[in-house]
Length: 84
Image (cartoon, rainbow, N blue to C red; front, side, top):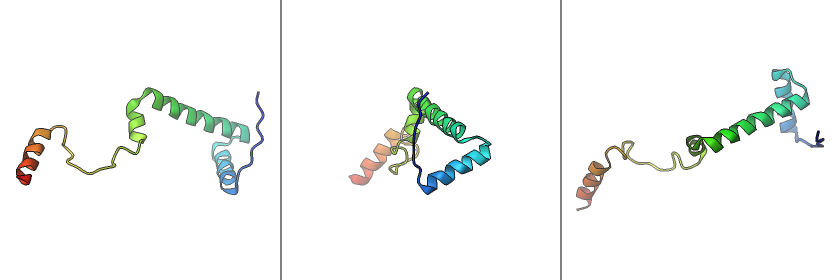
C-alpha cells in the first residue's frame, strides 16, 4: 500500500468534505472513489473514439450548414453561383 501526504487548498478541502458527507465515506474511500471515477472516464475515452471527440474542443468550434455532409454538393453549387 502506498502512503501519500498531500496538502489541499481550502476549496478542495471543502469539496472533499462535501463528498465525504454526501457519500458517507471516510477520506480514503472518498479519494479512492474519485480516482476510480476518473480512471473509468479515461478508460472509456481510450476505447470510445466518439467520446474522446465529444470531449475535444473541435466539436462546436465553427459555424456552418448543419446538413453539410448530406447536402454538400448542393451547398457547393449554391456557393459557387453566389461567387460567380
